[in-house]
Image (cartoon, rainbow, N blue to C red; front, side):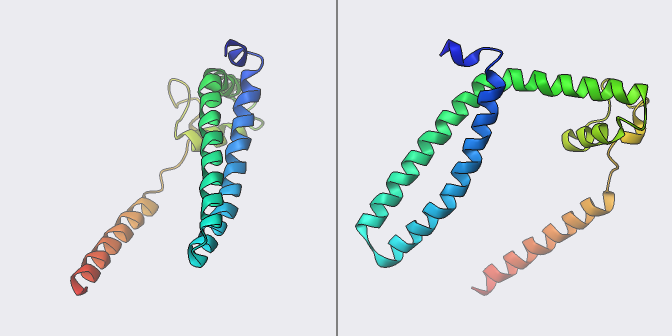
Length: 152
């Protein structure tokens, strides 16, 4: 197990794990279709195959989780190094590193390393209107669900 956590191989295992999860999700769609077909036909053979496929996919996802846990420290350091490089590029040339820093800040909902004075133009803008609209929409949905329950 120690060989899997070497500094050189950890990012490869981390990314390989991501590919396995994407593949498992795609496979899960196909397997789910066969599960529905087996349930409609009430076929024990198809439902048994469905269960076996789900068991194999579950084992693959657990294994992927172990690999991701082993390589997570190295992956975090790689992201931190990439951010440091983008931050330093932005401080040297404001136009060149602008897009990368904006992507980092919007993805991680942050602004700068210690303070936001030097990188203020790359900070994500608060979209208060979208948040208010989302809250109002969720309240309308809650009220609609509550009244539909009273009707039943």
